[in-house]
Length: 631
Image (cartoon, rainbow, N blue to C red; front, side):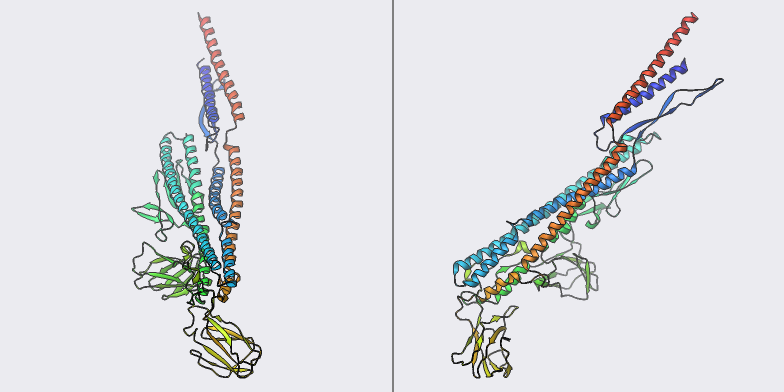
């Protein structure tokens, strides 16, 4: 009877374990990170008798967690990349929407400005027309300032999100370390895995992976080690290396991420953080946002310097030389806060048309200066400064120490800092300061052009000195006047350029011997719009990117580049989300809870429980029968 009882009791215990496990599965069917559990049972060691081996019932060996490391790893990797691209796409869409707006972008303001310049060239003496040009220039400046402010605000927002994400990473890492400790303590019962703790551990790894992209090493005792980036340790057993977020030592406008260790901080290269939402934020800020700010600043710098140069070659309504139409901030140079030297590095724009729209890193090696163009990592070495590269002149005082570095940002703040220098409409230099004229006594058919002032400013010191051109034959002329050298017998070609003292005129037709022409100061140029016409022509000239594009072309390229990148990232994010769904389905097909299956298991274990109870009841009946017979 005792054997039948013990077998029945073991069956009851096994059925009860099955019911409990099934109930656990059902109750956690919607729990994130939960893996379906199964009991593993085996027959107890049989008892050898003269009649053979008699069974001793059943025993529950363990509760197994239905788990595939490969499938779970696939899900984690897919989720990390999906989080990266989703975050990246969300941020990038902000710039795309900002730049692509047909009503609030720079393109309409540029068009309006050049239309007003053209109007001044046609009616230079009209004050309302001049005021309209000043107003449209001011509106263009305001548009540059506004867009730059929004981009700067985006950088601040991204930096805040980076700091917040780092805090979440630290919290998650601490929780993983705590779970590691609990798992290690639970392993005192050898061979019995703490399934629910392992599920919590896996869920935390999934959460961490979506934040930063984590590499996990499974230890034999059930604990895990976690690293990020290029192998930087984050969790080792129950030990945590805490991340920190602070202003970058190279560029305080950016939030850098480092690891606090031994009282110091090891800063991580942002390019190594290419997973999770943190990686998406870093990539957007360092690549697309910086490129957008630099490109917008490039257009602002090119416009301001080119218009200023032409303005200086003209003459305003009061007969005074033109002054700068716009003001621009100087390129920003930031010394690394870890520099030990005392050198001061400065930069200035020497040729806006040659600017690359990139930031630069200047490093002093102790013997040479190494300049890295960050857009393509092109490196150039110089033995000394100053040097001019990509339209930028870089200088340094003495005192640099080996290892000192400097961040040079030629155009990033230009759109934010561009401002109006001319607010009085009369200061618009619409006229040319010189004018060509022919003597009344001329008998030939020669005609002299009004003339134009040659770039670059400032004009030649002898620009306004009167110069006389006298023909000594139909094919030669003499030149007299201060600064000309007074050459004689100069060959004449009808319609060819004649250049002296920083101006250029053309004489066409057939001058007669003795005919004379003068080039002198423009003393009555109130209605003269020659210089304004040249300003207007700058709209269609390829003045930027080494003479390959216009102002509006450069802006359109920036808008197009952002739009294309946004579309590409959006497509990748959509594909990655679909990949997460596929990987999750594959993982859930193995580890997920199927409620229909669990309902069937309930019936199975319920029937087993009832059968075991019936066995015990039968044994009880048999035992009572034996007792009755004995009495």
